[in-house]
Image 1 (spheres, helix red, strand yellow):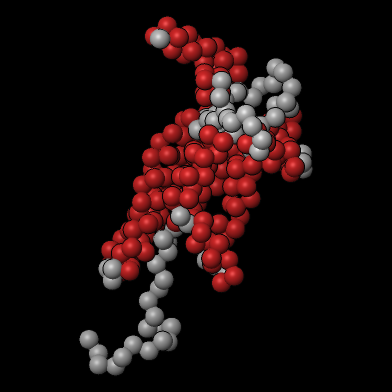
Image 2 (cartoon, helix red, strand yellow):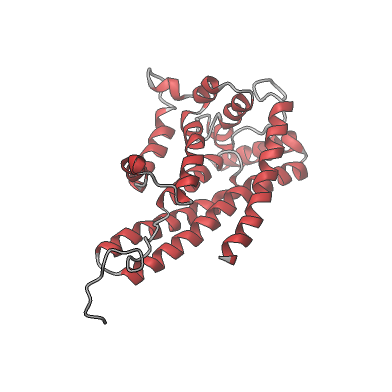
Amino acid sequence: MSAVPPSDSSFNTTQPIPNHMLWSILVTAFNFLVCCIACWNFPGLVTGIVAIVFSSKVNARLNAGDEAGARQASRNAKIWAWVTTAFLILGVVAFFISLAFLGGTEGYMERINEIRQQIEANR
Amino acid sequence: MPHRRTLLLLALPAAALAAGVGIWALRTFDPNLPGNPFPPCIFRTLTGHYCAGCGITRALHALVHGDVATALRMNVLATSLLALVPPVAAWQAGWQPRLLRPFATLLASPWLWGVVLFGFWIARNLPWYPFNLLAPG
């Protein structure tokens, strides 16, 4: 490499590596809460945790001096955060659609009552 | 990045559709009345306990009608998280003022959220003051 020490000009400074942690956490928390009503988005909980794990690796690797690894983790975190966001949105949409197919809230309640009876029968 | 544009083009209409249908439904029907078309929580129906998401429909109904106090009473956590969406989206887009940095560092802690989410879930089922304030209704 060059013998000139790196100056602090914008040309030489490397781009910051975003860890996407806030985004990952927020969509995962929403997936968690919305799962109460529209649990079609349950896979979003899993992918959200994957996103959070990758997000947490970004700064850890950066601190260990592994910049390439940090960039890789950042890219992965971003992908998984997007997937989680998609599950959140599509889960809600799919829930409305499934509600229409089940015959509205009444059909939905019938299904839930069936599940409850099954649980009680197995007790 | 073309990647990003495709994803945005896919995500935005879906989100807008969901939000539009949701706002229309919440302006048309009242989840506080019996016989409303909004489905109840599965967890609550099956176990009789509140889950962490219980009260979201009523909170959103209150928000759509401009009643922030009721929204907070129905589900403090969901309403607060909703308030966090615009700043976090801006943060993600690159708006990261130095002043908010300690706050962002605090929020970017998965363990904190794990404790908050599950703690909220348990706490709102406890029948005593002040925990009973967290229960919806």
